[in-house]
Structure formats: structure tokens, C-alpha cells
Image (cartoon, rainbow, N blue to C red; front, side, top):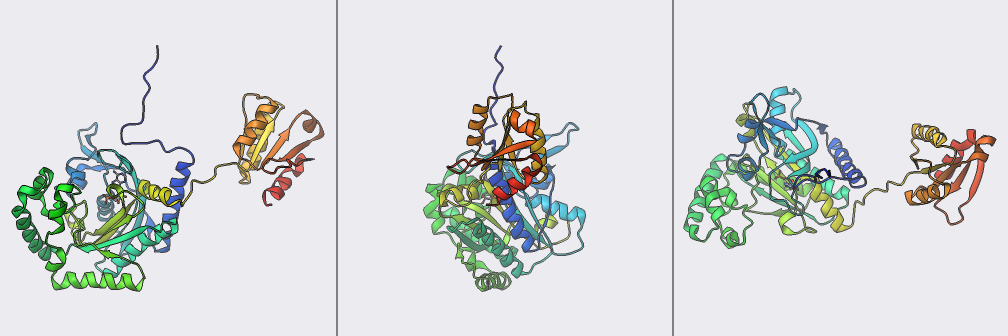
Length: 422
Ligand code: AMP
């Protein structure tokens, strides 16, 4: 009987050797940048109580339609995290760190039941930072600069920064009223989805990518005209600091974010090397009300999340940040049963020299072929002659001449090191 074959669930992928190392290297680049800016690593659970997320975005698809929520075996409502800001704020409240602002970075998978397409998955990975415990606009600029320096370190040249302010609550209230009445006037021309969104949150209509809505959105009132003095000053300081830091940006007056908790500074990084439907490679903003919404004390907060999968797509498109070469340093060819190779490989591994080999008593010829395929620069050969003489043969695999040399087994490491350093 043939058994059913399974495939990875829709919207998920296996990330195989090579691609997985590349993914990890990207995290490494981010870690270095985040540490340099004084952020510590935080790891929170992949699932949380459902309420952590429902409280943050009653009018967003991410929370209302796309959440992987479930009841655990005790009947408790849980959800796989669709994003990390809420989890980090929950962790901040729970752990009450004494040193403020609490500056943390994270990476890991997020889950959203979206319609999968290129660059849009149901399980995808994000990198991000959050800073909690400060209202200072300078920290907004520093965080934005950290994101920009990450893309630069990856080698991306075509990332632009869009910036907006969503104002404080009073400015936003006035703006929302103006927006509501504007969209109501154009209601009959809006897409059906946007009419539904309008009822819940007119701001979110600005986020519609549907062509039918484009013209109406284009002419909609802008937040900047409704900013009160204080949020205006906050925004101006962020801009001034970005200019001091020589971070280029574009004001994008209708930029809103996918979650409800944002106010004041909002920003998005877009790759000009990707299609417009998936060109957002990261984004974030200030969320000074989120801690209270999650039961904590009023706490200023700002952060961003970057999509790893999208950054790698942008890197492909710009021809940078290549997949690392996984070729081993050495390939061990053992024609005396295979156990000698095991001993040699464990010795090499303890010294950080990577090695590959064949198994199942393959012929010498087959092993040589495998050695060539592996991309190793050196071969170590152990046959009957070598074994009897207490020697091994070292062979240059990468060079045309295929230079070979017999050396004492006890001198193998020195010989390999000498040749590998060439
Ligand atoms: P968000 O949490 O929605 O602000 O998203 C932050 C970043 O995560 C975006 O700019 C994208 O780069 C990435 N992202 C969001 N949703 C997905 C998805 N479904 N698949 C891949 N990347 C995503």
C-alpha cells in the first residue's frame, strides 16, 4: 500500500541548507547592528493568550481574520503570534525591567492566515526592535537609523524610507472626523472592502491597495494639516535628528500601519527592487498607548519589524548577500572500511576544520567523484598502503595539477592547515 505523501502546509516553506544558512547570516548581521545600538536579545513564546492580540487591533485583518487562534487542551484561548510588538510589551509589563528605556531586539516566525503569494506567507520570519519607557523623539530617529543601517549592512542600495506622523489622540480625533466625512462623501465610489473598513476605522482605508480606491485616497485630507503643536514638534525633532544622522527619507502623508496601536511617528522601508505589492521590507512606529491597553502603566514605546523573507528577495533582486558556500574544507576518502575517516573527521571537527566523506563502502572512484562534487579544496586519502605506513595522502582537489603528497598521520593536521591557509 502506498502511503499518502504530505507537503508543507500552504503558505509555509522548507528552508533548506544554503538558504537556511543565508537566513541565519542575515539574523547575525541584524544582531550585530542591534547590539551596537545597545539592544539586548529577547525571546518570547510563539503562542500567547489570545487577548494579548485581540486587544491591540480590533479593526485590523491581522487580528480579526488572519489569526491562528485555537483552544488548548484545557480550553484556554491561545493564538500563534501574528506579530511581536504585543508579546514584547506583554513581557515588559510582566517582567518590569528597572533600566529604562528597555531596548530589545528579536527574531523569529510569525503566523498570519493570508493569501499566499511571492513574498507573502502564512509563516514568515521577522527581525525587530522595541524600546519601551521613553517618549523622546530622538529615540524614534535612532531606531529608524538602526533599520537603515541594517539594510545598508546587507548591501541593499534600493531601500527608501517613508515617514509620517499619526499625531496624538486629539489631533487624530480631528483628523478621523475629517477623513470620515471625506470618505462618506465618496462612499459610492469606494471598493466594497473599504466601505466595511470605513465603518471600523477610516484611517485603515488609506491602507487599501485596491485600484478602485486609489484616486479617492490620493485626494484625501492629510494628517499633517491636523497636527497639534506638541505632536508637530515631536515630528519636527525626529526629522531634524534624521537629517543630522544623514538618513534620507520621504514624507508620506497617508502612510498608516497595519495595526491600530500606532500614534505619532510611523515609518516604512520600501525596496524599489521589489513589486509594489510586496515592496514593504519593514516598518514600525510609536505606540505610547499600547502598554496601558495591555494592563500596564502608561509607557512610551517605539519599534519596527523587518520581514526576513522580503529582505532576502530584495537581496536576490539586487544581487547582494549571496547564499554562503557550504563546501567543506576537506573530503576524506577512506578505502579501508570507513572507520579511519570517522576518526579523522572527529579530529578535524574539534579543530574547526569542516569535512565530508562517503559512506557504504563506495569504490575509490565513486569517492573521488563525490569529493569533486563536494567542492572541498583538499582530499585526505587513506588506503591500505597509507594505513600500513602510518601515513595519509593529501591531495589538492581545487587546483588543476591535483598535487598529492604522502605525510605521516601525526603530521596530517599541520599539513592540512598549511595548505588551507594558502
Ligand atoms: P507588519 O508586522 O505587518 O508591520 O510587517 C512588518 C514586515 O514584515 C513587513 O514590512 C514585511 O516585510 C513583513 N511581512 C509582513 N507580513 C508578511 C507575510 N505574510 N509574509 C512575508 N513577510 C511579511
